[in-house]
Image 1: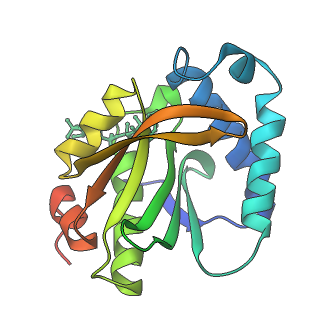
Image 2: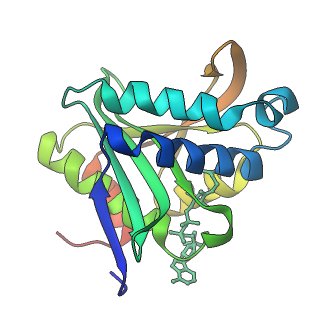
Image 3: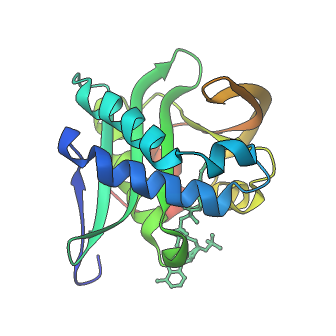
Length: 183
Ligand SMILES: CC(C)(COP(=O)(O)OP(=O)(O)OC[C@H]1O[C@@H](n2cnc3c(N)ncnc32)[C@H](O)[C@@H]1OP(=O)(O)O)[C@@H](O)C(=O)NCCC(=O)NCCS
């Protein structure tokens, strides 16, 4: 990992940071994909409350990592272990600050998640949902070996059904192979 970069697990104390990063990324990447009213409303507070709930819930099934550069948060990923009996572990969110994309942060966080999934249960698939129209993200995952398995209507933002695409890796090893990571 480059000098100054580090990845650590997020705790409930990081809810405000993760929520702000999430809102910033949605406003940049999801314009035209989610309703303007949702993006232009009090999205920061809404996302911060969501992450306060998620990170404060305890339990061991959700693991959330923050990537920091010189202690400044630049990206996060959340993984829900054994989220689905068919599709396996869920990569629930992966967001990089808009001006810091394409520097390898997404790949580093995916490698962290793949290692954790492999430690927990290496046989289960890994999956995630991509909003319809978020083609840069879909291509990013496809280049890493994910396969499109279905299109569905997902309750992405409470009360708003949004068309989404499920992508899946056969198992954590397949994602690590796509990342070119050898264990
Ligand atoms: C999609 C997303 C998570 C990818 O993360 P990222 O950090 O931008 O992706 P990476 O930098 O790891 O990889 C992207 C490309 O940059 C390249 N790259 C990696 N490190 C690099 C570096 N140091 N310098 C230049 N390019 C680099 C990679 O080779 C990769 O190219 P490829 O996809 O053609 O193989 C990020 O762009 C993002 O947050 N998008 C907006 C929110 C979003 O859509 N999230 C996904 C929700 S499903």
